[in-house]
Image (tube, rainbow, N blue to C red):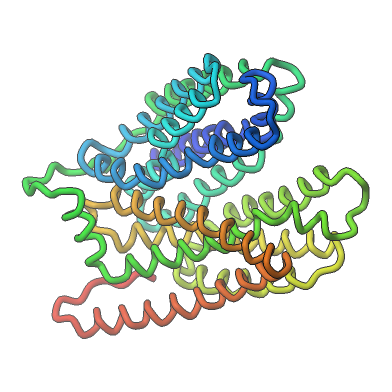
Length: 409
């Protein structure tokens, strides 16, 4: 097997394991706080639960560009090992916490040390032949999504057979074993070249944003994550408002969520070869339109099963949104700033994941739940128009430039 394929599959497995670990605590976090850490007041329990779950994403959003900058200096494999080993140690330490504050600080530290998705994207894209970058990044994204799906289910299953503290230890040990696999089997064939020019973080960020197409790609990614997470956040509430088949609400919510996510995994794997053949811009344009078409009707459904069918169709389109954007980041980014470009991209994605649920929840509260789905459909159509117009503008600027650059497909 070619080395780039070995890298791709090992890193996909590591990404899957890390996302499982990050999401494994979702089902039992309230119980852990109440039974192990003594948080029995319902109001305090909700506040601690939200803060502990969300703090890691906030610290991750802040630190990702810094790790990306470092990757451009010391190498991308080092950053992958840093994130997996760091997470393994932090999750192992969570078995020892005695107060909610200690758990909050460790979750914040896990976000600071993580950035594994950005590290893996940078590592894979820099060490994969150009004609296979789309396929490799799509496969990587499927591992990321699958980890997000199975994490809560695995956490729920492990609760039945072992103490909650032991789950943290098993998670940490598993991630350290994943680090060992990366050390032995992942090889960085395209290492960053040492630069004679000393650049600060802001100078190199300026060089990234000077490529006019990159802010367009970043903003398109922000809008995608805003709309995706904004609607995902409301599925539980939306299902409760529909006539679902039985009194077991959590089960039917899981069916709707898992159906959408599983469709995304399948689509990410299936679209990989087409991404390289048709080009990332064409795949992205098609999937943005289809995403809008499949999400707008969700605003008006009155049947649970119709919502599930539309969520599955929407999940299929999601598989063609993030991988093309990641491929475009690779194609437009300066070679010596690739890691930082992926870091900035990851932070902007996290900003979208943070803003989407807040805005959509407020909209659903003031009007009705379907209004948030309608807004997100409009956002997808706007994103299509914005992306097409800005890319055409960029092409005209390049065509008029005396030093013509190769345009991405």
